[in-house]
Length: 85
Image (tube, rainbow, N blue to C red; front, side):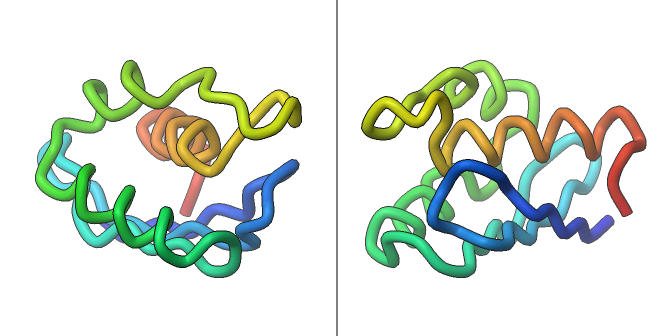
């Protein structure tokens, strides 16, 4: 299933991704640091969502209390909890 998430507290304004059978696919960040976003998208491709969440949850960017990786973890958690469309 395809999801869209509007992150808060980071430079990216939209994260899109798919979860199929618990596996993350096609993560795409709009806005933010393009190189980092592309790298993160490639690294999580094909990984179990629960593994991605455990690795990325709590990563902080420059004292913001969150980061694009952390916001992806939040988005995955919300998607798996049925809170995203």
